[in-house]
Image (cartoon, rainbow, N blue to C red):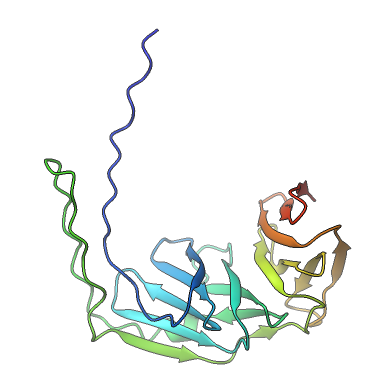
Length: 213
């Protein structure tokens, strides 16, 4: 049989978001797709609007921020962050986003189907507004190792899962104590994790293993 033709994929850079003073470790879209949260070596998280000239700088971690995750509840602008300062923090963005200016960004240029080259647009204009937030709504007690990765548990929006360099999988309940409500010992560093709606967690570790919990 004749093999299917490859899809005619086209990617063009729409804009550049600036502001971090160090390497960016991760960037994630919000559930609605209108915001991007990024974590950086510069100890901050930046939450940038893709529709307005507006961003929020989250500043409370004392070492590099390794990962961020969006609350899975639709319409709830809340993120969790994990850091090399060994803490997990939760940020409620609702108040800060009430300051979003009314002016919208101009629409991106339509890609030309007749050309394979795309001009790279400049970064956002200098009139972009930045709100600064320095008070998270939840800060965990310090873990035994660096927090390498974080995510909400979709089956319970209040529960956060974190992987640590101290070979631990940690579960925090932001309604309860700042200490983990559950610790699971792994045989190596937990470098990455992902969660699904039925409550399962998959971790990737320094021994090259994927484990489903």
